[in-house]
Image 1 (cartoon, rainbow, N blue to C red):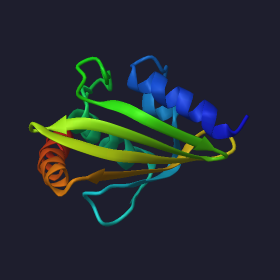
Image 2: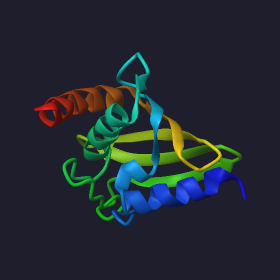
Image 3: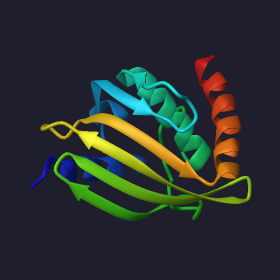
Length: 145
């Protein structure tokens, strides 16, 4: 089996709040996060965790302090399509932000051990990006304090 299958299984466990160790059990220490909001790659586990927590609280129903997720429980966020091959995954999602429909993809790359080495988020339409930008900025400021 390709390493991405185990990686994505653990990702789904994490977003359900069922993965022991949370993001630390998924992200390699030198992983890179690429955001539609920030034009430079964010390098390292800690900064990636910060962005994923902010994104989770913005796009889904994730408590950024506990990482406990209820994605899908409210119908706000759900994955609609998964493509997994080798070391790569594309997970398409739908959500609602400030009453507006948003559609995007998480593009995840893992190493041979199934640890995430790169996490890229892309989202559309422009109104959704603008709403995510404002909410993530506020959440990142809150988490940094």
